[in-house]
Image (cartoon, rainbow, N blue to C red; front, side, top):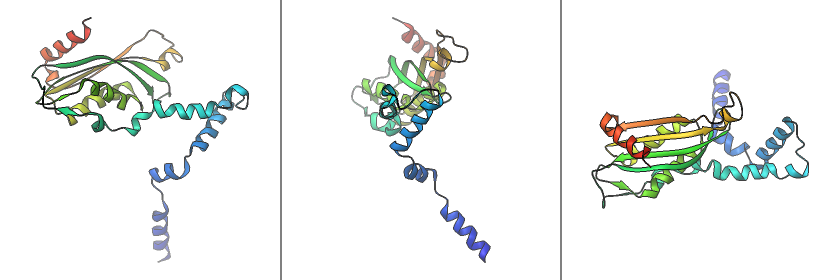
Length: 208
């Protein structure tokens, strides 16, 4: 009987991950950790130029990682009026993101095309969707896929294609140190898997 009670008590006491984050991670705790990191790399966190740096870093995260506070459906307002049967493209959308492997930035442009199925998006909504997903920790392949999958789910088009071109600071500033390397990823859904549809999209985004 005592063993059973012990097991019950142990399982009850285990907090969930969300509870751990909510109860123990505070702004002050994070700023203290950043000060320790500054000391670890060999600098003095108490010198004048660095005294406010932990606060500035945490504040900057509100923008850099603001995508966690947004949901795709909140920006994807669709319209029946003005719908068409032809491809809709917004190309060269600038973005900034952060690599989850080295916590280094990567940035570049994203081009999105979709073939409507009775509904269309306001042009700015595609750019806003890029912001929702880019302002998170991730790898570039996932960023491209998340944008495409979100459009397929919430807009229900006949197909979507996303092409992402980016420079990665983890490649430029460390490791192989190749400053001009550009990574290109794509996500192809629905009718864009047909060579003729995919080719039309690629011709459009490569044109000046």
